[in-house]
Amino acid sequence: MAIRERMSGNEAMAVAMKQINPDVVAAFPITPSTEVPQYFSNFVADGVVDTEFVAVESEHSAMSACVGAQAAGGRAMTATSANGLALMWEILYIAACSRLPIVMACVNRTLSGPLNIHNDHSDSMGARDSGWVQLYSENNQEAYDNMLMANRIGEHPDVMLPVMVCQDGFITSHAIENIELVEDDKVKAFVGEYNPKDYLLNKANPISVGPLDLQAHCFEHKRQQAEAMKNAKKVILEVSEEFAKMTGRKYGLFEEYKTEDAEVAVVILNSTAGTAKYVIDQYRAEGKKIGLIKPRVFRPFPVDELTAALSKFKAVAVMDKADSFNDAGGPLFTEVTSAMFAKGVFGPKVINYIYGLGGRDVRSTDIEVVFNELLKIAETGTVESVYNYLGVRE
Amino acid sequence: MSCKKELKTVTPDVKWKDITEGGVIPYAGNAELFKTGDWRSMKPIWLQEKCKQCLLCYPVCPDTSILINEEGKRIDFDFDHCKGCGVCVKVCPFKAIDFVEESK
Image (tube, rainbow over all chains, first blue to last red; front, side):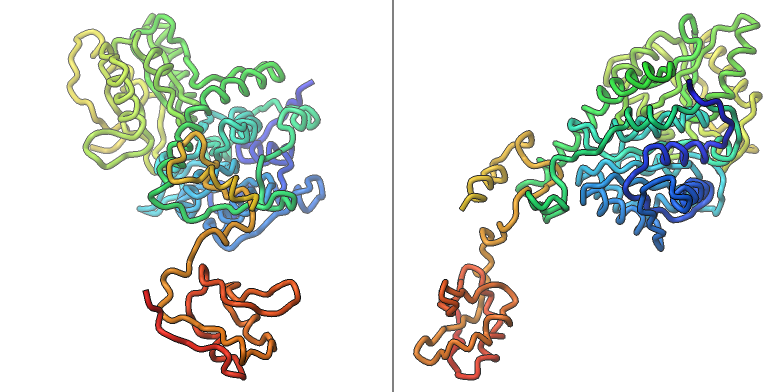
């Protein structure tokens, strides 16, 4: 029987890490992810995990220690947010290109500046091209479930890439909600052992990791890395299916909420999807045909599946909790629209809203503004403004 | 040498599907195959008749370019890897190593 509990999103991620029992956790505290290594260090002190906890002096060192540990043949995990993720930057790329399936709890917080500790997605969105698989989570349950699946995805021989599990700082990381935990023994059996083909501490077959790689071979390695990310999509679906058999909780590349007969839809990552679901229920009661697409997998980007799902709507609003400062649209918007263009999906009118920056509260009335605009566009077929800001004082 | 055969996987024309993951070099001892002696400007010359086999030169070589035979005696330099730093020349108490300009 699954375990009924109540805990914050941070504790849920830490509990997942406890159940995974990795060889090494190297982390440096930063709001709002601090609780993850804090809870975890309690597990270490209590002797309930076998993990070597490395209290490093910076996030750059945290990721470097994870790279070393994973290359040595261990399973390494970390947690961070915002500027901590930024300080890891160069090592994020090295982890990915060295094909080291490290798992990170990324508790989304706005990247300074201005200095602010609250939630938006500018941290993980900035790392979107670092070669990490990115999974997004609406609530504590999804953050926990994604963490349990992350090792299996990253460590698959066809993938061998690091995985970042994202959830919204404070909004879900610090909110205590009900959760269903999987039993320890079931997690252990599901996650299994990490058995890399080559690793540094293998005396029988010594290797070198991270050698100089110039014009003759670097491009081939990058191409191979790109293929691994492509393979990740299939592996994510397989692992999710197996997870659903164990827990009954089904996960795909994205969640569709009341889209079947919907004329318009919003595309939202993480916790604001929950607010959108509330608004959808209200509007549905009034007979308005609206729905939601909530991407769970942002890397790899599910081009075929997402564009097929979006093709049936008359109007779509892509919501970005990060700005690209490019006078063109946020990262999710530009990826969604370029995918639609590439796939020849020209039916829906697509607009973009930048919302919730620096932790600006996103209320149901804000989401109503978006749906009202979409319903207007669906009716008139006219888009007045593509690139918009939601909830900023004009 | 066994690793020479395996090194085929990183030939200049290897395709991306066949190259090692993440640039890993999946075998040891292959630095020997990477010839680094070709940018030497000064060259040590071993004067066998003056050499007393004291082996003071051997541990100071920053590479492994002073070769030792099965009897434990030094033999000539490994010029595939000697960079001509001259440390062995300085350390030799018997002036048994000459140091000359590299001629092409």
